[in-house]
Each structure stands twice: as C-alpha cells, then as structure tokens.
Length: 512
Ligand code: FAD
Ligand code: DLZ
Ligand code: SF4
Image (cartoon, rainbow, N blue to C red; front, side, top):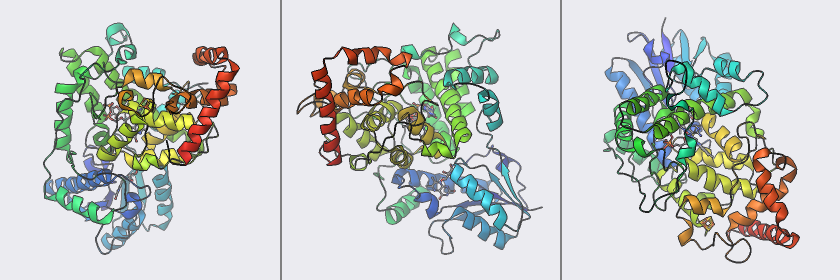
C-alpha cells in the first residue's frame, strides 16, 4: 500500500504518526504553499515567511532522512492554490492507495477535508494530533456534566495526569497549585528585554523573503529584520536560551509592560510550539528540570508551565467543544467597526500605539499587551468580536484559530458570555499606569476621566460597566466596582457617559 502523507504548515513535527509510521520506499509526503491559506486573513508577512521557510526546511529534513517529498511552492505553475486542490492533484499524479492527514487545527479545514473525502477516489484517513496533551475525548470527559468550566481545575488534573510539579503523595510541589499572586509585579525601573537570539538567514529563507515581498505587498506588517528560528534545531536553541537566561525571571514581571520592550521575560516560543517545531511536553519538562536543579524559582516555572499545560490545552478543548458556533458568539452585542488604527498603529493612545507597533514590527506582542491593551480597548469600546478575531488571527506569528479564537472571543471580549472567563478583563487607565510606563509620554492623562486630555480607557471603562450592569452587577467579583460606580454622584456619572460617547465618535472619525 502506498500512502500520500499530507503535512500542513503548522504540523512540522517528526514525532507525529504521519511521519513516524511512513514507509520510506513507498510513501510520499505532500507539503503545499497555497494562496487560500496565505490570504484567508491578511496574515502578517513575518508569519507567512516564517511558515513557508519552516515548511521548506522541514521538507528538506524529510528528504535528507530518505523520504519522498512532493513540495509545491506558491509559484509552481500548476499550483491550484488550495490544499484540497493540491491533494486531488497529487492523488491523480501519484495514484496512492490512501491519503493520510493529521487532523487540522481549524474547524474550517476539517470541514474541507470531510468534503474532500467525497471527491477522492481513494480513502482519506484523518489521524489525531498527538502533540496535544489532552485529547478531544479526554477534554470532553472532563467537561461533561460540569455546570461551569474553569481552567484552574482542568490544569490541576493535567498536572496530575502528566506528573508535572506533583509530589509522590499527589500534592502540588510547593504546596500550592498556582503561584500567580507572585507574578503581578509592576515593572521596576530599567526593566528591559535580555538579549534574544537571531538566526542567520540561509538561502531557503532568503528565497522565501523575496517571495513574500513580491507576492504579499498589501499584507500587514514589517518583513525585516527577520530573526525567526525556522528549523527544529534552531527552535531548540531558542528553548535552551529561554530556559537558561530568561525563565528564572519569567514569573515576577509576567504582567509588566515597558515602552519599546516587546519581549521582556516572555519565551517567544508559541510560534514554534504551534507550528510543530517544539513539543509542548518537552518545553514543560525542560522548565520543570530547571526548577528541580535550582536554576529557576517555582513561581516562574509553575507560571510558565500553567500557560502551556493549562491554558494552551484548555483553550483548544473549548474551541473544539463549542465550534462551529463559537465564532458567532457576541454575548455583549458589540457592533462597533474595528478602528483603522488597529492596522495602521496611528493613534494618540500611547499604550495602544506601543502594543500595535510591537505587533506590526515583530508579529508579536506579549500576553498582557494582547489582553489588557488591544483586547481591553476592543472590549470597552464594544467592537464587533468577529472583526477583532480576524485581526488577532492575522497579526501574530503564533496565531491559529484553535488558540486565537477562545483567547479573543472568550478571554478578551467576553463574547462567549463567560464560558472561558469568570469576569471580563476590563480595566481603566489605573491598571495600565500601574503595570507599564506607557502613560508618562502619552497625549492623554491617566488620572483624568473627563475633558480634552482625559484618557479614553477611563470613561469607556465606566460606560462599559454601566452598559452591562444587568449582566455583571450580580457577579461577586465585580461587587466592589459597581459599589464604586453607585457611590459616584449622578452628575459625574452622566459626564463620564457623555465623555465615553465623545471617545467613540472620535474613534469612528479616526481622531483618538
Ligand atoms: P509566554 O508568555 O512565554 O507563555 C509561554 C507559552 O504558554 C506560550 O508560548 C504559549 O504556548 C502558552 N500560552 C500562554 N498563554 C496562553 C493562552 N492564553 N492560550 C494559549 N496558550 C498560551 N496564543 C497563541 O499561541 N496564538 C494566538 O493566536 C493567541 N492569540 C491571543 C489573542 C488574545 C486576545 C490573547 C489575550 C492571547 C492570545 N494568545 C495566543 C495567548 C498568549 O498571549 C500567547 O500565547 C503568548 O503571548 C505568546 O507569546 P510567548 O510565546 O512569548 O508566551
Ligand atoms: C497559516 C498558513 C499559511 C499562511 N500558509 C499555509 C500554506 O501555504 N500551506 C499550509 O499547509 N498551511 C499554511 N498555513 C497553516 C494552515 O492555515 C493551518 O494548517 C491551519 O490554520 C490549521 O491550523
Ligand atoms: Fe494608555 Fe491612557 Fe495611559 Fe495614554 S494615558 S498610555 S491612553 S492608559
């Protein structure tokens, strides 16, 4: 039996069964660069370049290991420019007895492959994606019958199941499951990003950069400098660098934001884990070893592992459990158009300009900037969740719908009505002022709520709470906030709400 083995751009993992069970003599791998994947959203040019270069390097690695590979480049004359088109074409030309594919990370593609079955003359087998540490069945078994799903309890079970930071008696290492309280320090003076690795561009990457420059001139983002790892070996060096030099300080300043410092103590590993160059379990194990060897403190290691073993697996579970209608959710009836400054970066709001600038330049901004700056603004301003979702999916090198959509629609915008988060991540300028040094050089003043120099986050925050009073005032975690609102005199409340309307008008007119 000869098998056509399809590998998608975010499945570049030799440990997957699609590779591990291949027959070198008989089977052929298919990898295809196609326009339908490259432009179903206006992907950041760095993301396209990273994936195409990583795909080409992965194909080379397979060839050097003795496998047959059919690699279709974007500019190949006969390229049908869709994944199903390329599978059909390969089946026609190579006449395999079966097509195997690892399940895709997005609902959209799974549907396409289900339809493709009908068009194919040979069977199509969809293999599970075993890189994840919780299968669909395991997630559903955990979630079934629960009134409320919360990441924290899922995470504890994952720690036990994979025996990570768990003592022989089943108790958590350090006697606590979660050290988050220690990980919310505001930035200290001079906090900056330690030096990061930058990888030499070889001929493959240079070719890809030229291709992207030529074929995606109207896509979002700055292409160069381009410093991404594009092979597993390079990604492993990035992991080693992180564990050795950065992980020890990961926890303390996890939530801090600093002007012109996009990375701080974050790992930058999501793009590599999501594309398959690193395995989530090996990343967690390396972090755990760093704790046991005394190299990194527990608040950093536990905090880091929680993001991967907890959040990453949890959001994937939520995505597949609640798709396809998850993308349609709009529990807060948010209908504002996405302001143009999300793409252009042209806003006077200093914090937004910083987060948007990092995003444009690096196809990256760290979690708190995504959640508490760009996400928070979209939440407060009532921007249409679908438009926000499409933006996040396009602009980050690590963005794939299975992970991006729950983070955006659920965590950030509360558009899923609280499926993912127990309360909205809504914050006024107070939070941003405390956790960053952005406000010092801003046109707006974080301590002013009404008037010309009023920071938009203030009135928009109170207006958001007032607008959604019915939904949130009974939430135990928001009682104090509503009590503060209720204590304000009526004149101040009206002034704040009028100011919020003025901010929204300025936003629509591109003056914010
Ligand atoms: P670190 O801060 O170093 O964290 C370590 C690792 O933990 C990450 O590499 C990632 O694999 C994992 N992780 C951390 N937080 C999360 C989370 N909330 N969900 C899932 N995994 C997590 N992450 C993506 O991988 N792709 C996305 O498209 C994406 N979109 C997001 C959109 C919004 C609105 C928000 C608020 C968050 C989003 N995240 C997304 C989660 C998180 O912001 C990124 O994983 C993280 O910023 C990537 O940078 P890093 O590798 O330096 O992460
Ligand atoms: C994101 C992406 C891009 C930009 N291009 C390709 C491509 O040309 N070929 C391919 O196989 N995959 C690509 N991808 C990744 C897919 O979109 C990804 O497999 C789905 O988003 C599912 O996670
Ligand atoms: Fe952002 Fe407001 Fe601070 Fe300016 S003053 S940086 S808009 S929080």
